[in-house]
Length: 298
Image (cartoon, rainbow, N blue to C red):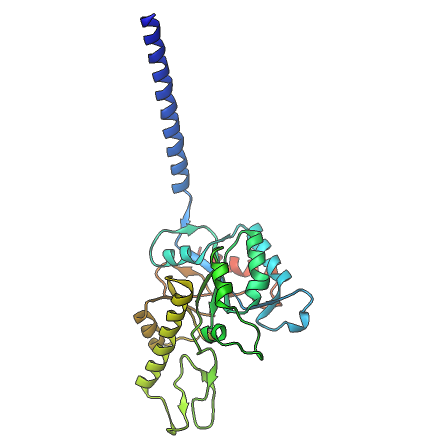
């Protein structure tokens, strides 16, 4: 009886050992499969602005599309094999970290319109995608009945729980101001303003101080409302200069998002974006445009 029991114990031990080996082998196989998935050190970024209901075609302009058109774009991205990745993965790749899947794309929206909450957010949740919005802080802090409705901080907090992210489009420099006695309005972020009370334009120090005050206050508001997060800046009108780049980097801003089109590679600081938010851009045209940038890389 003891011999039989001993034999049975040995048999069970052997079976257990074999099973354990199989589990380890399977786990290793899964790990190898995951690690050998081809990764890229490049990605595309799409740019949108405002979105309206399908029946509100009278509101369309060069930076406004219908939610139906946006849906068509997102479906086309999926069918064409594109991988919509979160901004955090994109930033990690751009800073020299791990790569991203082939055909990766980031969805961005500018200006912080409330349509991102009412129309875009439900669509993104439905499709299992995420996007980032670059908000103008003043527009969320101060209600303006004459402007398009903008996102509230509470709406942003809600969406952040579902993977959406929010970054700076300046606090209050997304406009043009006079640059001379005659007027000559130009972007407030990148050009010194004319000061009528002093009958002159800002000097270099005054200009830099104004830019730094605005950008630092916006970072403060973002952290106060949304908590600690990476610092990114979408440039109003797409303009940048050395002073903005230097001030931004001093404030810890990692990447600067342009309106110029192109594909992005790791270690860039200035990020190209493809304009997808024009009502005349069909889903087919968008995919063709994206494919062209990728083709130029080969």
